[in-house]
Image 1: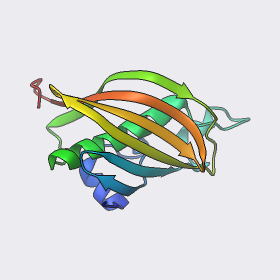
Image 2: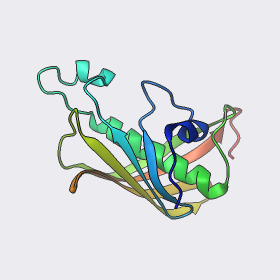
Image 3: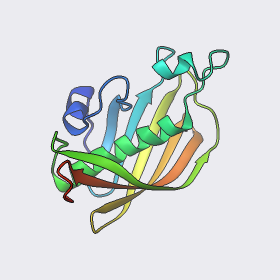
Image 4: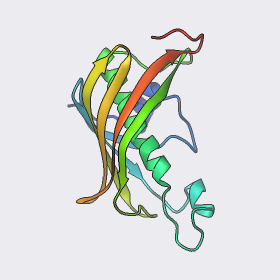
Length: 152
């Protein structure tokens, strides 16, 4: 099980502020699962408008954080890194559920488990927790595409 700090994460994900939503990888079992964290602070740019009187992390960004964790697991599984010649896209999001709001000061624990990889489509079960509480879950399907349009 490998942990990763932010410097290594930057080698696997093309995202940068304000859209990089992984702060640390706690563990990674290539081909199986990955656990990462996102420290949610009041300085997040989305809190200014969502909602100023009661700051809540948008559910779509929780799903995006889970997808970024899935991307790292995908790249670690195939022994590659993200590069500027390809993009990791959503192919589908199923069974998404949001159980509790995520607010400033929370540490979002992201866990993704690889269910299968068939014909260029990665399928994951993903859960986000704050402490022991499940805050979101979804089934994610993702694919890597070359910027020239060919499938990787």
